[in-house]
Length: 240
Image 1 (cartoon, rainbow, N blue to C red):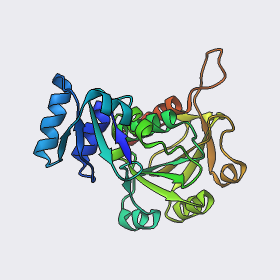
Image 2: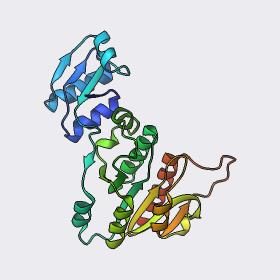
Image 3: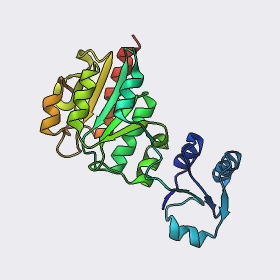
Image 4: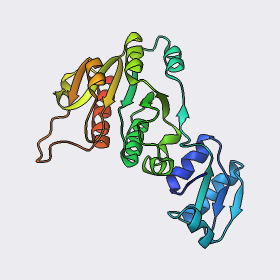
C-alpha cells in the first residue's frame, strides 16, 4: 500500500478522479482542512488516526496522508490508442524518457509536461523511476493528469511515432540550437538518463539532436530543467 503526503499531490490525486482513499487525518491545519473538505466533497472516506500512528505509516506527513492502491495514479494510455485518437491533428507533442532513474527528476519532468501541455509521455516500463510518493510530490500532483504510456521497447515506439508523422529530436548538449529547428507539427523529444544520456539505439532513431546553448561553467543542465526549456520553445513556435 502507498501513501501520498504532499498537499499538492493529495489534492490533485483527489481532483483527478483516480481511485484513492481513505484519507488519514491526524491533525489538520488550515491547508489540511481544505483538503479534508475536498475529500468529503468527492466522497473520499476519512479516517481519524493519532499522530504517532500516522508517522509510522507515512513519515513525511503534514497531518494527513492519502492511501492509494496503484503505483502512481497516472493517466495511462497505450501508444496504439493515442495514435489512433490523433486523427487529423497536425500538432502534437510527445516526450520520450530514456531511463530517467531519479524520481525527483521524473516528477519534475512530469510537472513541466503538464505546464506545457505534452500530449503523451512514453517510458520503458521497467527502467525508469517509479517511486510513486516522490514522483507525485515532486510533480506537484501533475502525475495524476499527464497521460503516460509504458512500453518494453522504446525503439519500436519511436518507429510507430515516425509512421504517424512525428519528427523525433534527442536532447544533447552538442545538438543544434533549439531555436534554429522547426519544432512545430507532430514533434517528439527524447530525454536521456542523468548520467549516460540517450542510449545509442534511440539516438540512431532520432531525426536530429537538439541542444540548449549555455554559457556557464557547469557542462550541462539538470534533465528536468532542460525539459522545461525545450518544451517552452516548442510551445513558443506553435503559438506563432
